Each structure stands twice: as structure tokens, then as C-alpha cells.
Length: 354
Image (cartoon, rainbow, N blue to C red; front, side, top):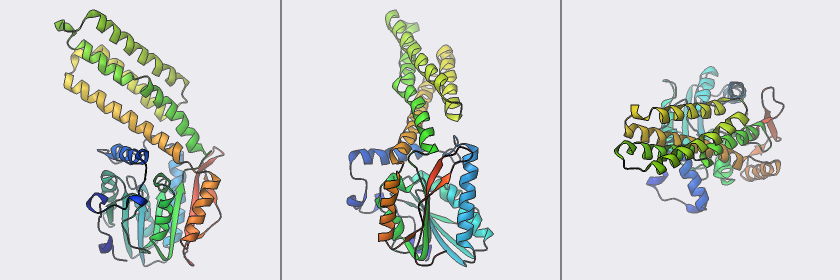
């Protein structure tokens, strides 16, 4: 395969087969939320709350899988589907170099323009990844063009069709390897806990109450707002802080609790020192924090929504086999020292691919 045949193709620039896209308004909102999650995001921020022990397990898994896959191959063409900021691409490039691959050709796809740009830009100098903005359920590639298709916690977000699409682009003797969110696993449990904490911030309207407090206090010195209104805004803000404080105390230690605790401290500092900041800066900060919390919560609830049961995965296996891939027995990647599943492992190969 020559990557000249799969130069960056953006769905916005070509007719869309709506039957292959997520069909409901909820699904369109889901896609828009993920684009918003990535909009303006910097490299290195996608997994900043991940347990470092989990990061080690995931990296070791992929290093083993891809090093074995690339061994002795003079040329490898690869696509990372739902690539995020390109974590797998960098691992794949390192493995290709270590395995002595002579020519490593890569594409990365994601529904977000910013995500694929981050992924492509993060590749080592000696490697290249061509970005393609695309929904995983409708890949902009011809049939059977890649030696290797990979995805980490990505295909399931686009629905069952994404697994069929991944199989479609796998070439002769090629393979598909994916990690998929597991229902009842440790990731689902952690997401439930974090979602409950973030929901307390959103449902308690801490940042909305803070914005209303600011609106009341800034003109208060000019007498434009009544004392009664000011007292009401102060009381409402206190209720917002109380609700989040209670949620923080109930939450398990970890990066998410630390994040919310810092937000509370920063919000209290802002409220008590309001006169030290320009009103425009205050509004921008509150708005940015609100978007950050909402994006974080959406990420957690999305993970809960797409966690796959054993029956779900057997249906996935059926799709892949119907597409001509041979699927190894269903297995899970175990979490480090926690005695639970970290992900379903999908290992599917065409013909005698190794």
C-alpha cells in the first residue's frame, strides 16, 4: 500500500453516508461532544488522570503485540482508528524501528481534527502518520489496504459498525488488534466513581453560581444590585460549595478528587479576591473551567455507556468472522494488582497473519 492513496480525507469535505454514521440526535451530540473535548487540547492531556500502573500495563501489552506483529516484516502499513492524541502510534513507530521494519507507513483517524493533528505531530522524526478526520463507523479507505489496524478504547464509541469497518480495511495476511472497554471491569468502576464526583460539580451548579455571584458583586459598589440580591447570590454560592465539599469528602483519593478539590480552592480564592481580577478574565476562567468539567464528565459517562458485555463481544466476534477475519478466543487484559479486567482483547487475523 502507498499512503499516497489515503491522504488526509475529511468527512466535512465529501458526501457522507448517513446510514453508516451514528443515526440518532443523541449520537450526533455524542460526536460533537468528543470534538469539543479535543478542541484546543494540548498534547499529553488525554490521559493525565490515568493511574501510572495502568499506563505501564497498556504500554507493555502493545509493545509485546506489535513487536511480534512487525518481526521480520520489510514493510508495514498501519492505521490507528480513533487515535486520540496518538499514544498507540508512537508505540507502533518505536516497535517498528526495534523490529527492523524497513518502511513503516501509518494513518491515524479520529472524529476530531485536533486529535489527529496532535497524533500526527507527535510521531518521531523518522516516522510519518497521515491524519484523516473520520468517524470510525465510516473509514475513508479502500478495502484491504492495511497490514495492521489497531485501536485502544476507541472502536466501541462508534458502535458495532466500527468493528466491521476495521475488518474491511485489513489486507491479506493482515490483522486487527484492539482493546475495548469491559463491562464490570476496573475502568467502569473507576469511571462511575469519578462521574459521581463530577456530577456533584455540574448538578450543584458551583461554577454557574460563581458566575452569578460575580455578576452581582462587580456592580454592587455602584449600587446597581440590591443588597437582597447580593445576599441571595452569596447564599447560593455557599450551597454550591457545600455540595461539592461533601462530594470531595466522599470520593476516593486520586487525581479526579485532587482536580475538583483544586477547583474548589481556586473558586473560593476568586470569590474572596474578586477585586484583584479583571472582569473579562474572571468570566473567561469560569467559562473555561465549566467546559473542562463538562468535558471530563462526558468522557466518564461515555466510557460507561460503551462498556461491552460478554454477549456484546460475541456479537463483535461474529461481525469480524463474517468479514473474513479469524478471531482468537475472547480474553481480557488484567488490571495491575487489582484482580479485575482492564479491557477486552480483540485479536483478529486474516489468513495466516502472525
